[in-house]
Amino acid sequence: MLRRMTRVLLGGGVVLAAAVGSVAPGGVAGATSGSGAVRPHQTFVGLVNGSQTGAKVKVVCSEAVRPGERGNPVSGQTIAVRSPAPSSASSGATGSSGRRIVAQFSTASTAAAADVVFTSYGSQPIPTTLLLPCMGSGTVVFAPWPTSATARSVTLTVTFVSPCPGVCAGHRRLR
Image 1 (tube, one colour):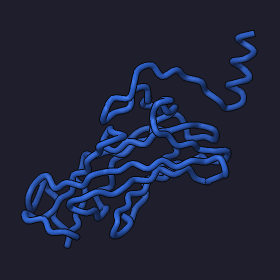
Image 2 (image 1 turned 90 degrees about the vertical axis):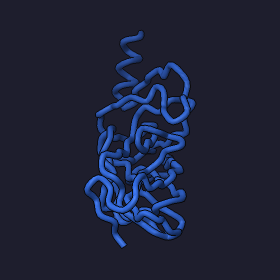
Image 3 (image 1 turned 60 degrees about the vertical axis):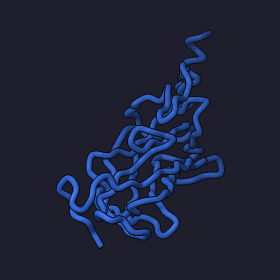
């Protein structure tokens, strides 16, 4: 009976996993590093620099940061999607059609110019070509694509910080 149920569940594209533990601030317990392909009918979480909540993105900016100033993200930072999503985490769903998850940074003033596209679960570098605010907050929206009536995006709030004045780690400030 168990073998038959397993075959039916796996044949239908549904994978069951038990998430043991609780969600710790700044992280997601039970989220795996999964490298499987993004497919329909999956739950997922989005992470920025390994965190689902309280994520900070370091941005190269001038010594005296002014409101409205923008710069490039410091290299070595990551954006990720993990599946399955722990039941206690705020999660998205690929719905009946999703085969990609598109992550997009946006701020109150402008949307970033580049999307990060995931066709499999895991981490990617945050593109250092983005222009992001030097301070303040914004969001990263993780949206399944193509979308469907059963698809659900997940939005993370991020804080932008300038870790060093002027030139930082070989990056130059953009005006």
